[in-house]
Length: 141
Image 1 (cartoon, helix red, strand yellow):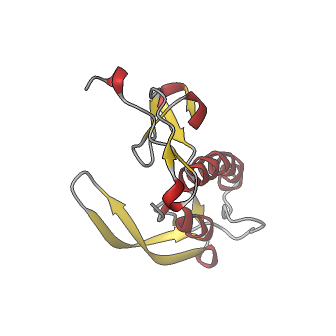
Image 2 (tube, rainbow, N blue to C red):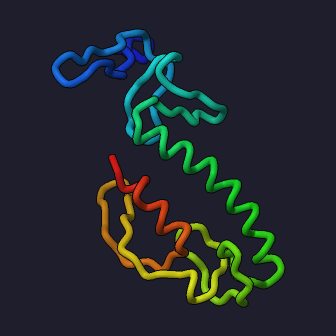
């Protein structure tokens, strides 16, 4: 089957009444790998394609917001203070997720998934509270 023959995998309906869209695929979701048509997803430059499944849309929205947050918080780091929201302590530690600098009270050791080509590992990471709150979205399938 060639790429031009792949059908949209988006499902409509509820439980037993679900049916597939069936239109020709125009993209493949970067998060779940499902194919979708132009009506059933978002296609941006650099092949950043996202289907309309709820968990994939949440990841898309979170990443968009997170990028803006990084730019804003980087300004605090440039002044030599913690990147935590409304925190003015001197920064000491680097978040292993977003790589900004934070004070001790704005950091937490937590279990995080590290996904590689062949395995998924649970490791302990030192991450900021902002990235810890984001884990709930990114740990869903």
